[in-house]
Image (cartoon, rainbow, N blue to C red; front, side):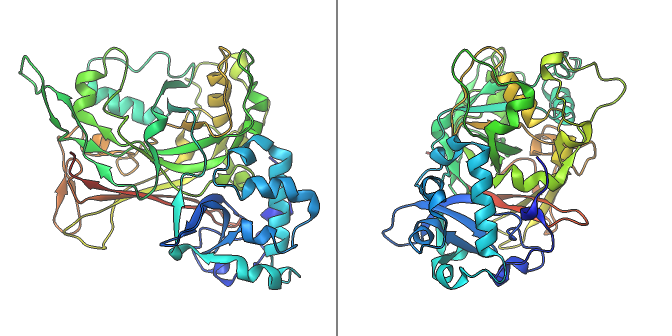
Length: 433
């Protein structure tokens, strides 16, 4: 994805908060979401984040500020779900992004028409940005694979297939929800070491998993395949994803088919989708060494190696009932450590003829880096519940307690480019039924 005028770091918006230091949503970002005013009897509709505001695309389309040639894409972008916009593909996405950048930049003649179409993000509530037909969770972090393997199967070698293909399993789309949805402590079977029989009850080892969500665009017909060099044309953008996990349930049920009840009770996504085009300044190489095997031809991209990955910063923090509004940092890492690219995930997903559809969701799997401060879940941070995390207020955590709130944040930042943020993805644990 080449840089263009919408990425110019010198661009400024007439929405003044878009220039605030540390702002996640400058004019170079323009992510899409679905919202309505909190407490109002309104329909959900599509909007675009700009500074601390949302440009209400339904209201904006009625002002006459946009070209009639954009009527169809504007209609899709203001819908209660963004599946239709996702289905339109990169030419429509680029056209809309370019027009939004034009009318929102400082000095635009459309300011007078569009100023009344802004809604403060603080006054909004959000819905899932798309209807999720299918949810696939990948396993693409080398460091997470090593760390989790040492905990669950300490005598087993690293997975022999990890460096040959992007490992994945199918999740449960019915329990994907938007950030802020309560996290009910799930029940399930667990078996304590030394016991011959399992017991049933609420999980005692509730965990978060820091992932990114890739939202599928046009997709492919069943029986066809998406080539790796064409795959990014089928990726609308990214959100933050938290694939909540019950580790004690997982340890008992996961062999031989993988997680089931340990993961299907809730997956949270942040409300804003940052488009792949907005992330163009933050390309980076995939982490490969001389020891890695050669990528098989069908997963080899002709894209320059330095452009195949994405350098997205990932930060997890915890708020506790006792700590009030204070956030306690847990980890900080980068998606740049991800072993497989999103293009390779998409291409691999369709190798056997599986059809991807607009609004399908691909989770990247837990993202961890090589250092102790770069681990993407409590399972790794606590060495499987053996080493508590110490919080600044004196509290300790092995796993999540009722009343805990996990807050995940992501952003891109680099000298010479505008900061691109994702907002946050959060959830508060409540006791289960």
